[in-house]
Length: 295
Image 1: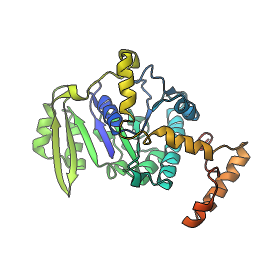
Image 2: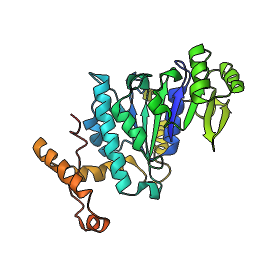
Image 3: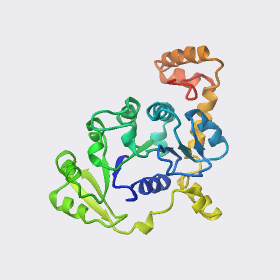
Image 4: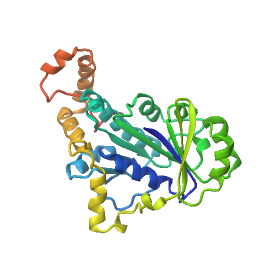
């Protein structure tokens, strides 16, 4: 699912996106420029640290970017693209395996007039059976038009701002009667908007206790922490981010940067081989390095 969550500060949009990601299973990678997820053991400051955290058993990875936000996002998005590509090669879409990429305050990497090239690439290429992409915004009008055409579901919290209402009506297609209802939603209530065979559909959720929870790790007791981790992998023990990263790490054990660059070229050549040739290759062949790519 490609989904956008919009709402004012403290509306619950980020928590809802996180809850949906946990219930979907398969591991979660979060881009968190506002530091909403505090104290999580899977927190990193550089995309190159993902593998070490997953090796420690973490299924929920939270990147707190340091330095240039856009540059740090591009590095993380490059890892997500590599994981998605490998998952397609391993037929995750047929096996029911997937993971989630959650971008909080996506306005940092996508505005009305500009969008991160890597984010657009992810949204354009991803198989929804393999990868969920969740983007949160305070204002829906900040969603870039190139993304809008590729988002299939909108989760809309209360807004009465004329610019947002105008956008929801003219750009998204929300009916007038629902625009009125959206203006009267209470805190943590939301409307889910999507098209069903070309027909706009709107469903409402009025019971936040089914999904609303703190985002700061220290607010959970030990049992709750274990429950949170289990939710991220509850569908299937094999349906985990760790499995994919373990295999990716086996394929990425290069030497210096020149070796990596040569490996990338060889991999592009291998992609042109037929299926029977791929089956004959040893498992530890080389692929694009997620640790050093897109520097």
